[in-house]
Length: 166
Image (cartoon, rainbow, N blue to C red):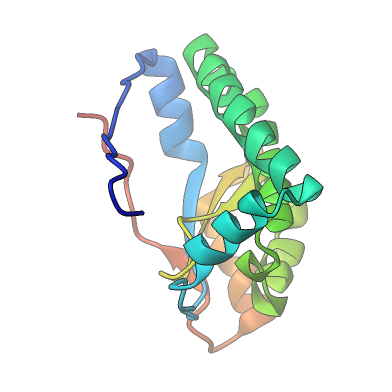
């Protein structure tokens, strides 16, 4: 908006070595093989906010609270609590923008439901990636095998990634 000054503020959080290790083991990035254009997303979200749509207002407020709780759980070393909040964030995101999900995304999440504790689409979804926190004892290989079994020769699969800590 004209005249609106925005400044990025970043607050780093300190995680214990055990929490970092657990996140390294349980965080998985999934490529959907599908990209979507999110160019109208901001306009739609702001439009619903300005229009005082109750579901959007509630979800936007809850996402802010959820982010603070996510930080709290990570600082405590509670990856399970963080994963549950990630799931809640996903449900809130769909209230703000129904287009943040689609049939493929829902099928992917459904096919690995018993393997994950938390899930969320990365960013606005335009890059085609999903992030999940695995249940304890579940491996990336198990998720990869399930995705190959369900989606066969498609591009859907576990992306090779590592969390960056510094």
